[in-house]
Every structure is written in structure tokens, then in C-alpha cells.
Amino acid sequence: MSVKLHKALFLDRDGVVNVDHGYVYQSDKFEFINGIFNTCKTFYDAGYKVIVVTNQSGIGRGYYTEADFLALTQWMKTQFSNHNIEIADVYFCPHHPNKALPEYLKQCDCRKPAPGMLLQGIKEHNIDPKQSIMVGDKLSDMQAAQKAGITTRVLVRSGQSLDESAKQHADLVIDSIDDLTEPLAL
Ligand SMILES: O=P(O)(O)OC[C@@H](O)[C@H]1O[C@@H](OP(=O)(O)O)[C@@H](O)[C@@H](O)[C@@H]1O
Ligand SMILES: [Mg+2]
Ligand SMILES: [Zn+2]
Image (cartoon, rainbow, N blue to C red; front, side, top):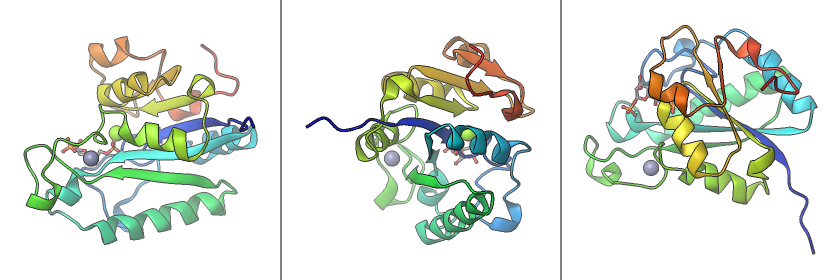
């Protein structure tokens, strides 16, 4: 029996959903990027599952706990649902290869640029990577998407400068999340 495959809008979190103030773990420090709700609503209404994939080495480094992260995630999902957008899932990597507490010290396959979180999302939500989009603000987001076979990789500047190598791994470079249209202007 064939399973219906879905398309997904994969989003990096810090620098795409919220301003990356550095290891954000509290809702009062969580500043949504202008335009993120509008853009997500457009893709959600067009049938995309919205899935967040985020490196959270702040957990491994001991800056905050998994419980802190999960509470913030619940709050973030509520803000999306208040805008009539369902976040299908949030995947996070708490590890770091050399700067973490013992239980999180590991060369894992989930920390971007590794594709583990994306591959898990693809599997668990029956996603077709060829119809899907990854939006990130760093080279590591583009590399993870490439390894996961996600066809469309979008790099968003979000007010920061981007390095050349990151641009080379992207199909589309945009200044703001507002510039992400559906269908995509590739
Ligand atoms: O952009 P996503 O993947 O959602 O999350 C990245 C963050 O968890 C943090 O990632 C850190 O990198 P290291 O994890 O220390 O390399 C730094 O870039 C922090 O400023 C940033 O807040
Ligand atoms: Mg980021
Ligand atoms: Zn990991």
C-alpha cells in the first residue's frame, strides 16, 4: 500500500523563527522575526507541514535544561496556533562534540550540519524531501538539508551578514522571511 507523502517547510529556529540573541531559552527573550507568522501561514495553507529543527547545545553546555527548552517550545507552538498555524513537530539536538556536560558530550548524528533531525522528521511525518524546503541562517542548515536530500534550500539573512560558502550551498538567498513566497520564486 502506498503512503501519501507530504511536503514540508523545515525551519531552523534561532535566526529564522526568532532573533538569535544567543542560547535563548525564556519566552520573554524570544523575539519573533517579523513576517514569520505570515510566511508560515501561507505555506501551511498551501499544504506544507511546518517542522522546526534546532541545535540546542545550550542544553549540553548546561546553560538551561531540556525542561526549559520544552516549556519554551510549548509556548512557541501556542503562539503559532494563535495565528492558526500548526507546528507539526520540533526536533532538537542537545549535544555538543567537545563542550558539554558528560551526558551530552557526543559526536551525534543530529547536530546540524548532520542531517539526523531532518531525516527523523522526513520518516516520522511521511515527508517527500523532493517537494520540501529548508529555511536556515547558517551554512550548517544548508549542509544538513543537502545531506537529507531536501531539494530546496533557502538562506535567510535576518539582518546578519552571510558567509560566501553558506550562499554557495543555497538555492535561494533572501534578506527577509517576507521574501519567501508560495510558489517559490527560484
Ligand atoms: O539556529 P538553531 O539551530 O535553531 O539554534 C542555534 C542556537 O542553539 C545557538 O547555536 C549556537 O551555536 P553552537 O550550538 O554553540 O554551535 C550559537 O550560534 C548561538 O548563538 C545560538 O543561539
Ligand atoms: Mg539558526
Ligand atoms: Zn545531537
